[in-house]
Length: 207
Image 1 (spheres, helix red, strand yellow):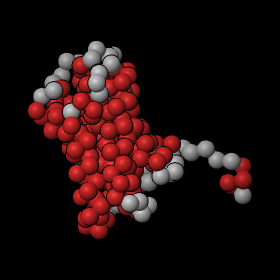
Image 2 (image 1 turned 90 degrees about the horizontal axis):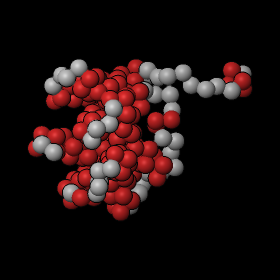
Image 3 (image 1 turned 180 degrees about the vertical axis):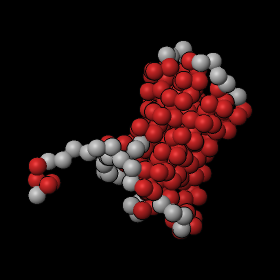
Image 4 (image 1 turned 135 degrees about the vertical axis):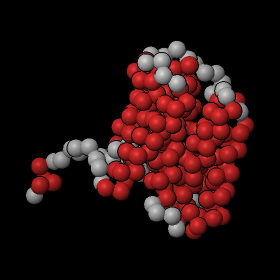
């Protein structure tokens, strides 16, 4: 992995861990619980991706820096959560940033392992949503990806940009930057303006 990709991967790990740590503080977990949620949010998606593409051992376990960065974010959130909470909707903003970074990095890594562009896009989505699902499940909250907000769709869009660039032999790095911006932009607009997919309704909901 090039130094630039490693830095982006660690950045994605950090921001996802911040989202996990912030949610843990909101649920009044102790310091151990904050660290567990930070690590779960940061590495679960990458672990699932690496297992599926046969990257053994998974990067999050083979390289100590991933868990170290995740725990650092957890400690920062535990002791400085008030400063983080002053930011607008911090959990969703950090989660959106992590989603974007992991979606494009996951797609890129899957392409490097010989997967088709379509399969790589799906693996990129898994990389992006896996951590958020694990984080939400651990606090018994319905995962955001299962709700009507643009979440998995945003990850698919971001990863799709990288996959299309590979199909047309376009430079990978600019495509990853554009894909990350597309993913984060969709997620941010969904948060800010309530963009969402159609949701299921029971007959009683209209009464």
